[in-house]
Image (tube, rainbow, N blue to C red; front, top):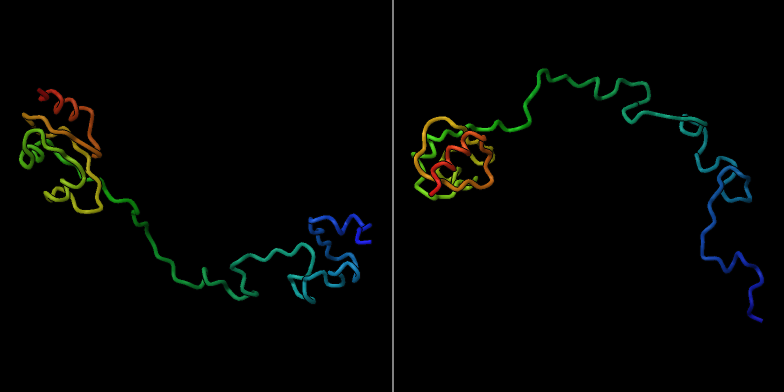
Length: 141
């Protein structure tokens, strides 16, 4: 007869290991913790930077003073600059601003209401102040 009488052999689930429950359980005696030492004891908690009592690397290295700004400063672009560089109904976007040398690659720009403009421009993907937006839209035909 090929029937298996034991139900546990039919199960596909793997039994959870229970360390420290005797030699017969498969993980007895030291319960997989090795022998002696700080890590083998109950409740051990060793910080990652701990170096066995030696002063940690983070304390040994010299400290760099000050603070460095991580973000790139936004460049203010005036309406006077736009009126000098662009023609009527042209598109103002990041690419054209970089090509015309208004901003450098990697910088961000915001159009501010400084100066005058007497024609309409299409602005895409560039920051613009509310008053500058109104000034440009007044020139729309």
